[in-house]
Length: 548
Image 1 (cartoon, rainbow, N blue to C red):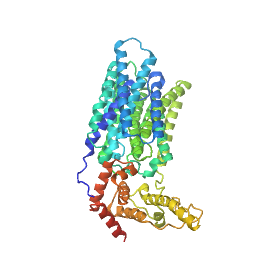
Image 2: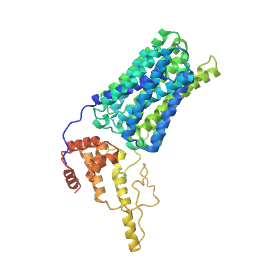
Image 3: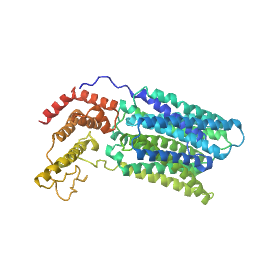
Image 4: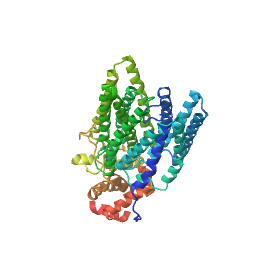
């Protein structure tokens, strides 16, 4: 079967609606919940509104975990509701501002929480839209949206509450036009599919590893706690408009410099993963902010601005993490987006309260609070880098271990596909084997598991198990790996080609690998281009001849 030769379009056009939508949701949340500040918890009731929004996001994560992969209709419904509640909440606050007088705190807080929840759900939608996109495209979206939103919040945040809430209302309902525009283009992940190693330099299996996910959360929580403590220690600028403008300007310059470096990295399509550099930048910003805060006076003012820039970068980092895990993890993308967002904002609230508490316990002495801030940042960085430096090759095929080599361009998840297929075939034939065993009065033989060897090469089984005779299906699967090495196929192309050569339709391949049919279609076309083959039968003929 031939595949049309239509070339995929560039990603820049497909990324524009995602950048606009993510930036609008971030600005709406900052103008309503954070009351015009660049970052930080809600000033109302010591971050109570932020915690309420965190509860709503956590509820969505639990529902997504229970239901599994949400259907497209459910995603559209959630987005439709989110746009309305974000806009209605902001509009209600605008009416209260225009009416004047002292509105009940409960009503104001409820409207802020309603609008903030809608804005956050919209951010989750755009992160979901970005799943399976390349790491450079993800970084481009995350940091472009960061700078657009930071500039808008810096300008609109110093205006009155009525202007802020009206702007949030307009930006919320502008999401209707942005979502319509995004549907005119292919999803970014369909134009240029992601590779697992491009995000963190690790294999795809790590994205479903609970320990790896927990490490990422620990890193986010530690940095968020440090940012929260820094916010509590920063001298207030209330009543001094010039000082507030200078503080915002310093934060924008610092965050903009780091974002510019990240964007250059993304535009260069560098093979080096961006995540370690982002963590280094975060640690550096927090360290500089800690030193400046410890000096006091004008230096403390600058330290608070640098810490605010670190918090802004952390928001972009959370978006990057969410898309990475959503692209290759086993859960619905809403789970990763919601959990990482809750970890960031809830820990920032806790950090702010902790900073106030420690400072109150030692009046006039900021050393204990600064020590807590530095300890949180240091611990999170240490945990993240110790995990990133670990060997990601955990799951391998028995034959590769015995031969002592691993393909360089194939990730662990794609190498193990042959063994996984073999195990599935053995399980499928188990009922027939049991029936034949009963007929002749013989004991059925146990099916060997595909991975009975530790990563150091030692056998973990009690006794060696004889290798089963390779079936034609396993022969094809292992031959595809050799073919992939010869023609330089990517890991995802190896997976697609294996199932495609086994006779699966594109729809079935899409279902098995959790990809859209357009993405599978693009992969197959690229496989044909790289191998100079033009049909499934030619691929099968080549595999038979190559291994013959």
